[in-house]
Image (tube, rainbow, N blue to C red; front, top):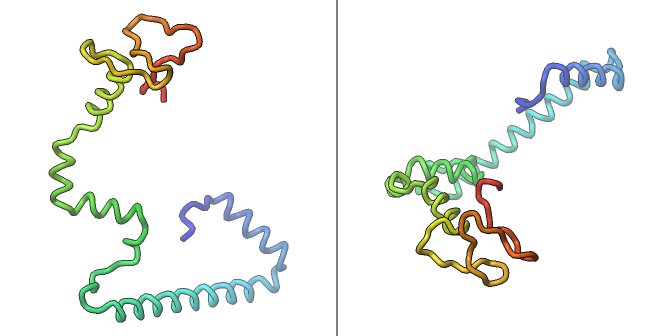
Length: 141
């Protein structure tokens, strides 16, 4: 729950709690807060169980953590056999380099018009005309 709190931050929180509540009231406050957190966890677990029972047996392996988009995508990419096959045949670095070469005009047989001004891409070593934008550089972004 508090994985990103460092030791110094924890010490500052303890000192601040002692200053705000005082050493005599601090144990009671800690007990009340922990009881409140326990009640929230129990409520959350009972709500999850109610939702699972209402969804029925076809969703018995449903996990609420899968609703997080990052977790869902990670799970789909690692478990889906079709995506593994596609990912194995797709070289993203090569595709990005091909697009960057096409945008920068490094391929001699392509005459892709530039996005600004409608002129052809500059050949290697050419300078853009005054007022024209330089070609896109994928390595600079």
